[in-house]
Figure (tube, rainbow, N blue to C red):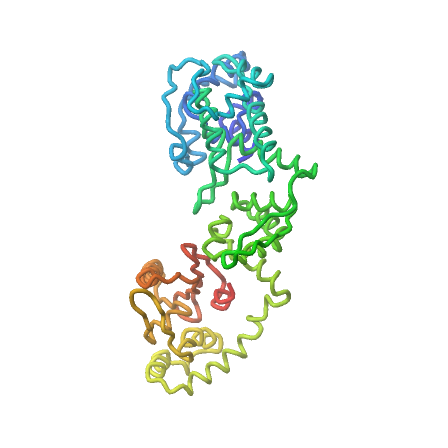
Length: 441
């Protein structure tokens, strides 16, 4: 959501005169998302003054109905109550609290010890315009000044937002910071976060951000240093907190491919998917293609060009295999009636029978997959789309039973010639064009 969106929204409400008021009261992207009923009521007097005599604003009180905001964005997805205790502010006076909940409260010290802080305190009141941006700039500059790597952790952001609320009780902490939530494509947001991103850009342009980070390998005690520019680091931070729009994601992804690949050497696939929310979207496999093309230049089409020849050789090998189950399965498939394309897909199904069944070592017992389990272990073939989730869950349960990681798997649904294809990675399901692309991903 951007300022343009807010202006468009006000136009749809037939309230174009309020655009300047939203700007004057610093109602930007983050604060708009967290507006509550009492805050909207507080805006009404100021709006009434600024729009006095304007015939286009006849029913301003209708803004008290927050359902209009609810229809734009599902506020249940934000859950600020999960991060901050809720306080009753209805009827509370605009008084700056004098007590301290902690001797280490940074915000209170800044407000009391700096001229800018005193000015900010003086701007707090029911009939005043609170200097939120000035407050955030004061806080963030102080934090970065005392940070060697110019970073602020999620916990520190939440602590600072809560400190603001402890001092100015009418200031909702979620207006200042809401963290990115793993598993959901919701970026970090808030006034503190926006100021932080802006100030880091200034530091980067001034050459004040370190050019090197230290990576602790998971399999060695030796530290490995990875060179990183401030611009690349900011790009990584953006990717960790944003999943859309895809055009922007793709640009950032290509920009720091080399760096991500270096860092990925010490991560699991699950870690990688949790770190970058864009991978959990339907377009995520395109980003994996970008990584592959970087690692194996000019190899991206190799599987597609070679598979017809390879599958033909494998099919002949399957026919020669002395395996009663395989022969029965091929007979049921009526393989001699299948066209060339269908045979190429069918080969994927029975390819595991050309290999020896592995022994899965797991505590407290071992598991040697049956031949039918082997068939479903390489590519999962399903007759009906309605069974898709059930089959995925059964596979996950089996892996949990033997305490082994759930590996990514291609899925083919329906007849060979007219199938739907997917790739299951962790709890993400990609839809892809064809079975070979599913293998490729």
